[in-house]
Image (cartoon, rainbow, N blue to C red):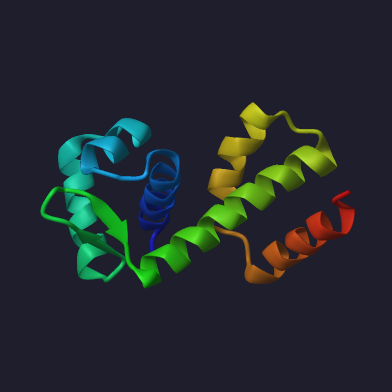
Length: 122
């Protein structure tokens, strides 16, 4: 899956947790993308089995979509925490950096970061 698809799934998960429902306009507003761009992306995610769209327009993650979104969100959260904890990077810098890093690091590197966080949490 491409980085953009991962970002869409992560955004759907975050919005659903925040407000209990997700519509295309919510994603467009959150990511500051156009509604047509979101509609195209949702079509691809739906065809690939990551989301379903209810008649009301509510977007739901499938089991496959939830698993992928959760994995991306965990990477984002832990990499942000790692940058702040180990390097003293301020949140407003660590957050967008983690968003970029989460898509390119190896599983081995992520597992090591995750272990480091677990070993150093109080």
